[in-house]
Structure formats: structure tokens, C-alpha cells
Length: 309
Image (cartoon, rainbow, N blue to C red):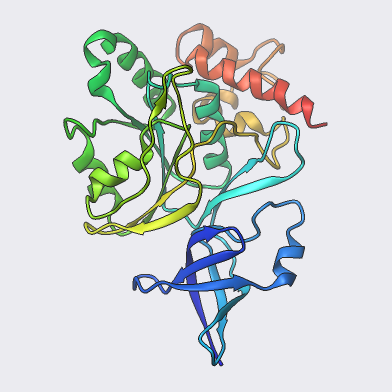
């Protein structure tokens, strides 16, 4: 019997693939039942990116016997009114949040919920604006407005096109040496982006549903790939919803960097930034220093929070 530690690189239900990173030599493993029972409110007790202990038997089969402490993870509520939560990935060095202004149209409140979750768990986030070749000429003003919202909040925005190669070299270079999560709504082009970053990889690529201009789910499993240029990328299934987990409504404003920067100047502490006089956040919104779109996302999260109480 051999014991060791490895990283989960693929999650296929109750079966997993592990590798002793930085070596890429994958082998299958199953999960010991006790671990599954411990995480009753988590739909997946083990996530891609997790460092785990394993035990290999004489017949060559391996069993995951424990999970090492996570440095961070991205978690979402499974459905709007569910008490269960789902861990998307763990131990991430950078989250790349892929959005498209159109095809499908970006939903800012959805993007903001993912950004808040990254802030909560200390995960640096970069926003990738995909498919710019499809709408740049007709929508340059909208691209500029989008950049102003999120660069003003403190996030890097990279414009990309898998057709023209725009932005690809920047992402390839930024991914070197780390574990990178690619996430976003269905149809935004995550798998196509991974394929162009490293043509030797073959993640599934789907088409947009013409009826609804929404992506069809093509990636159904969470999987990590090694990039030939260096680093690793985790491809995740397209998301249709993203509910916040383990976050009190009084805390939400702390995870909007641009609101946190001015909130110390509010007259009252704590301040909900909704109705209080002398609120520095509301004043910054009125002056155009905080984007009203981000402030409206914040108000939406406060309302959404009531549904779970």
C-alpha cells in the first residue's frame, strides 16, 4: 500500500483524476464514503484544484482519504432557493471571468456576484471580454463604458478574440506558473479560448442557441488542463445562476472594492449605503465616482439576501 498527496484535476461525479503537480501524470481515484458524508450541505465534497491525500492499494486502485486545507475556493449556491452549495474550484491563483457584451449579452449583476465571491475568498480576478471581433465596430462606446465600470472598480479587463488573436498572448503569459480558473455564463467562449491558448488541448466547444442567444451547456465536467506555455487552466461548465453563500448582508459592501475605499467616510457605522444621511458611497455614486451599475448590483444582492432568510 502506498500513501501520498496529489491534486484533483478532474471531477466526474464520484470518480476523480489526480496528478502530483507540477508533474502531469494522471491516475484515477474514488472517494472514501466518510468524506462524502461530512459535506452534507456541499454538493461536491472534493473539487478540482483540491490537494488531497490518497492511498494506493496493491491492485493499483487509489482512494482519496482526506482533503488538505484550501487556500481559497469559488463557491456558489446551487439554485436560487437551495440551501446546498457547490464548490466550482479550489486553490486558484487567478480567476478569469469570461463575458461577452453580446452573443450572449453580459448580465452585470451575475458578473458582480462572481466578483464578490472572489473578493470574499481572496482570489484575484481578471475580466475577459470575449468575441470582440463580432461587435467592436458597432459597439465601441459600449466596450469603453464596460471598461470604465470595471477598471474603475479596480479590475483588469482584457479584450479578446479567438478569431483575430487579440489579447490571447496577454492571457497566455499571465497564466504561466499558476492554476487559473476560467468561468462564466454558458456560451461566452471559455472552451474556445482555452483551445486557442493551447491548440493541443481539446475542451468541448458549443454553439449559441439562436432562439435565446444563450449558450448550450457543452462542458459538463470540471477539468484542469496543463498549458504547454506553462501553468494550468480549469475549465468549468457554463453557469446559468450564481447565488452568494455564507455572506451576511451587512458584509456585502466590503467586497465591492470601490465602495470599500470610500465607506470609512460615511457618517454612520455600520452604514448600509441605502438610506442613511451622510453616506459617502451614495455621494460617490451621485458624483460618478462609483458606477451606478455596480451600486444597483449591490442593492440587488441586499434584496436577494432576504430570500434565504
